[in-house]
Image (cartoon, rainbow, N blue to C red; front, side):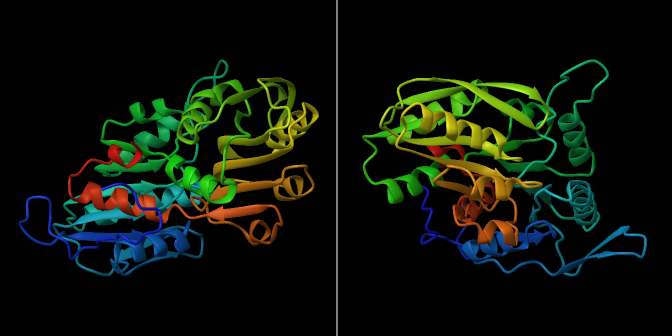
Length: 336
């Protein structure tokens, strides 16, 4: 069945398992990092949220209690490791441990935004590979599977020795572009740097559009300068595509460079809206026509109030992936 981003074909736990032997024993557990997304996934699946509580002692030590029986059941924990990254990471690990000690049959860590993913290699001497460390922590805490979305680097899947599914927001982005842009005859998909060319090419293929590349030189961490635009953007509506927007500097510079090269407008689709520090103000005051992000990270009030930032939900995509995982069906077929 093709993926339905509207959620109209949600099938819920009342459906039979793949072999027809009965109802699915599925539980959804939510951490505190992104409760609205967890609630939306729960609604899509028509599965009530498992009762539990996450408390903190006076010294902010985390305590978890699962208040329903989960013995022998397939449990999915919804928890992004976004800001505050360390607190949300620790909460995820303790939730996994609590469920394993409660005799859950299988525990899947659903991490829509995988924090520390940008530290996937040694950029210099005496530096860590923190993404590998986080993978080890999740695995050693007892997780049986991991389900995540648009990893910063696909090879991070190899950091885990347990099954790991990396979902792609591309189907949701494609549907949104078709709805808001209509014809794509004058659209160009743009990668804000050379490293994102594969992602840009994949989206361009979906909407039958050409691609362009911004050649970026980064002088210091958190700052970037776009030097050249590779490709024909004159008179075109440009769509920048990337996985993470943090400070917003790269996007703003890329949009400026595209407009100087003759583009009629510049917009952006980004999966994970980290938007730290003054990023929201930077985006609002830029020449970007719009920035569209997903709710993989819970949007702040500033993001919701921004005139040129829009949030689209990936709850149906994750919900469908959870359903297929629980039924031992193909997840990759969601994207082809």
